Length: 348
Image (cartoon, rainbow, N blue to C red; front, side, top):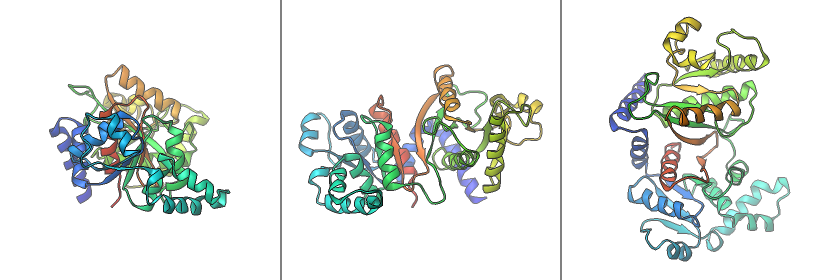
C-alpha cells in the first residue's frame, strides 16, 4: 500500500508541475546517474550532452574524438561533459576482452572483438555491461538495428524476460482530454516487435505497467486491446489477446489488467458500462497494450496527428540495463528527455 501511495503522490506532482517532461527531468536530476551518449559526431547529441550536465539531469559520457567534437561545436560549453575516444581509450583492450568472452561461443575471434569494440555503440554497450555507466542512449544518426544489436548481444535481456519491447508516453494537448484522468497515457508496443505470442504479449503488458509506474508515476490500469470486447467476436487474433490476458493475470495478479477490450470500451465510461459492466479497468484504462506493432504504430500516430498528443518514445524495456534508441529525426530536446528517462530506468 505504501508503494501505491508513493505512486499516486508522484502522479499528483506531475499534474502540479505542468508537464510530464519537466517532472521526469526533475526526478532524473535527483538520481545523479551516468549516461553514455554514443554519437559525438552529431551536433544535436553534443548540445544535448551539454544541456544534461548544465541542468544536472545526469552525468554524461560523450563518445568521440575530443578535439573534433570541440572544434565542430565551438558554441557549446562542454565543461563537465566527459568525452571519451573509444579508439584511444585505456579501457579499449579490457572491453575487447569482455566482448570476446561474451561472443566467442558465436565464433568471434580476439582480433574481431578488438575491432568491434572500437565502434562507439559497441563501446558504449561494453561500458554499460562493465558497470562504468548506468545507461546508454544512441540512434540519432544510426539505425535502430545498429543501436539494439549491441544491446541484445552484450547487455541482453533482464532475468526472466524473453524479449525486449517498447512503449510510448502519450501526453494530451494543452487543456487535457476528458478521457485521460491522469494527464498521461502509455501505449505499447508501438516501435519494436512486429508480432507477439500470447506469452510475449503478456510479458509486454507486465513490463509496460511497471514502466508506467516507474517513469510516468501512474497507478496502472491496463487494457489488453482487440477488435472484440469480452468475447463479442470470435477469431484467432482475439484468442491470442484472451490468452495473453490470462497469462498476465496469472503472472501478475496484483495488476489492474483486463482484456480483451476494444479501445472505446477501455477508455469511455459510457461504452464500458454497456460492453464490460463488471470490469474495474474498462472506461478508465491508462495503459494500452496493442495486439501487434502494426496496430500500435498506427494507434499512437493517430493520437499524435489527429488528437494532438505529444508522443515520447519509443522507450525500450526488458534489457538487463537501460538502453534506449533515438529517432534519426530527433531534436536535442528529445535526446535530453531520453537521457532523463534512461536515468529513471536504472535499478539501484
